[in-house]
Image 1: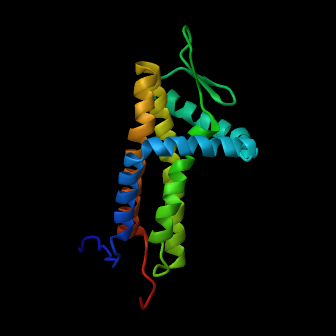
Image 2: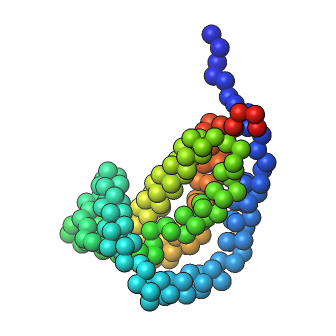
Length: 193
């Protein structure tokens, strides 16, 4: 009986180098990025471009985060954009539209531009894209849940540190795993490539 056969894909390491450079640049220029993020947030709010995110996506994510926290043993209730932890002395946290992980989607799409090259079959690229989107969404739900737990137990400063720095490392780590997994198990080279 033969063991599993793993395909070998001839891929340059450009995608991984790009992800590493993004991580380094984000950590180096974080204060500038925080300012730019605030400016971008103000622009989007003034253009009313955040309506769909605020009215549809945030309430959906709030409910999913509540499910995760409930499974972890917390007593949770929700409103449109608030998560309430506990009963006797409730802890209330607001999840605003700018907190749901759109920055990780931007980093994902930057990496997809260089990683999903035309040398792979269309079906395997679609599978990798689906895996990337679902994985990034689940990673963001886990990230939001972790931030709320840290905020609940340890306060604002540790939660802000986790949100501002650890979240970036988690996002880049997820993308490293995603690309390794995709190149190893998902992406298939076109015949004759």
